[in-house]
Length: 112
Image (cartoon, rainbow, N blue to C red; front, side, top):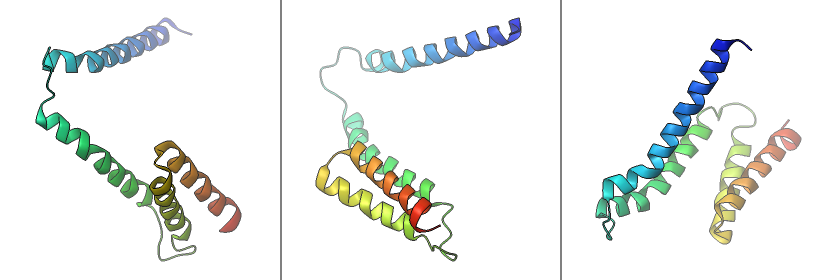
């Protein structure tokens, strides 16, 4: 490896480490020793998960061709299955994994 490549790699690692440290300590610097969490942060904590899930759904379904075979059937089945798994199981990791596995089985084995 050349010296430029090594220096570039070290610079990237240092920037990533600096940003990580900053994001970990920023809340303590911003809110200091306050014992109460501001109402705006509580609102964001409640609203953001649903907004992120909505954005992920739009992102994942953006390339689905509903006018050609298989007409989005694997995507729809996987989305409904993910929602049902989460509804009954209340475990995000299992819901996402279950929906992903089902989608891959549908795409690779059923709707070839």
